[in-house]
Each structure stands twice: as structure tokens, then as C-alpha cells.
Length: 251
Ligand code: FPP
Image 1 (cartoon, helix red, strand yellow):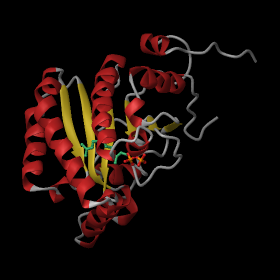
Image 2 (cartoon, rainbow, N blue to C red):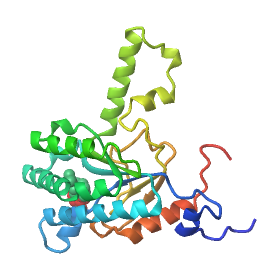
Image 3 (spheres, protein in one colour):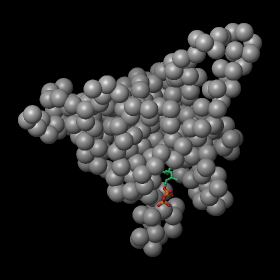
Image 4 (cartoon, protein in one colour):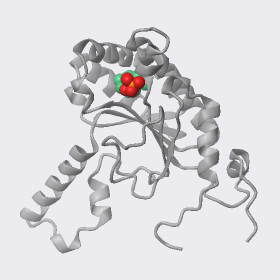
């Protein structure tokens, strides 16, 4: 068997060559902000600040590559265990990010969607988030999903509870429950299946992120710390994805 020539992102975008092509849905665990700052003798918040800039440019790059949905893990339900001052800094960054970037994102045709229990945030942050969702609701060029106070096990638990409730009330039959029943109860309902899951900073775990949705996702781990992850880094990840053979359990 002759080896297929390596397929570039541009080939993938043009729909030429073999392999998986451009992913429709990419999710990123943006890890390594703290270490980026530490290595420079800076406070952790400096790493988060730089991390926000990286997120902004990756959103742009994803659109240019033709990625339909980009899901970013910005705050996990486990992040509450961080020092209060760091949580406050993250919330401030979130406030500033929405105020500064919302109009530009809206102008770029990006629809903002949030997964996770962001209602637990300060009321003014909740209001800003709701405003961002409403402001971009009619956009359809690409979707930016931000995971805020998100935890996959809790999301799946809530879905199971809702389904169990339906069965108990006689609205559903347990025998009819399928994977799509569960899909439809998750916060990612209606989004294309997750194709590619990226984690930066050298850690190789999922950390309670999109556990159900990642069933057939391709995983990509890079040592690059999140603040250093740029357009080229995204192109490298997408290029790697484009060369993969996806078999979904088949041959
Ligand atoms: C991981 O770095 C990063 C996060 C805690 C989340 C990502 C956050 C941003 C990109 C900033 C924007 C966040 C919000 C809420 C708007 P880390 O601190 O775990 O890095 P380390 O593992 O090197 O300590």
C-alpha cells in the first residue's frame, strides 16, 4: 500500500485529497495560562489576559478555516476551587472581553452560545452573557460556544434526570431511549457532532469536558501553552485532523 501524501489544511479546505477534511466542530481545552505567566515571573492573571487574546485570534482563524463551531472551555465547574482573587480576575476578564469584543464578533456573523451553569455567576456577568447571546442570536456564519461553569458529568446527570422524569410521568418509554434522546437533552443539542478536541499545555486528559460528545472526536494534544496558541497552531491541529482516517468503529 502506498502512503497517501500528507494533506494540508488548504487541500482539506478545497475538499481534495483523502482523510477527514476540515472539522465542522472543534473544541479546545485552553490550558497553561498560569505556567505561561509563571515562566515569565508574572502573576497568573497576566497569563489569563494573554489567554483571552489567544482566544480572540483563534476565533478569527477558525472562521477563516471554515470551522462551523468552536467550543472553548473558559471556566469549569471545578475552577471554583481556585483562590477567590483568581476567580474574581477571571470574571473581570470575562466582563471586559464581552464589552470589548461583542460588537466585532456580532459583525463577523458569529453566534454566541453558552454551555454550563453560568447563572451561578454574579448578576451583572449573567446579564452581559445573556446580552451577548441575544445580540448574536440571528447570526449564522459560525458559532462560538463558550463553556462557563461547565462540567460534563453534571450535564449528563441533568439529562438523565430529565429523561427519568419523563419516564416516571409516562411521557416516554424506557425501551425507546436512544443515544439521540440523550443528545437532545444535552446543552450541545443541535450542534454538529464534535470532530476535534484540542488540549494545550501537554496535559493529556479530558477534565470533565464534553465526555459524551467526544465519543468519536479526534483528540489532539500539544505542548504549546494556551497563550502561545495562535493561528498557525490551529492550522497545524486542523492539518493533523485532516490526515486522520475516521472509522467510527468500522474498518
Ligand atoms: C487554564 O490555565 C485556563 C483556564 C482556567 C481557563 C481559560 C481561561 C482563559 C482563556 C481566560 C478567559 C477566562 C474567562 C472566564 C473569560 P491554567 O490557569 O489552568 O494554567 P496552568 O495549568 O498553567 O496553571
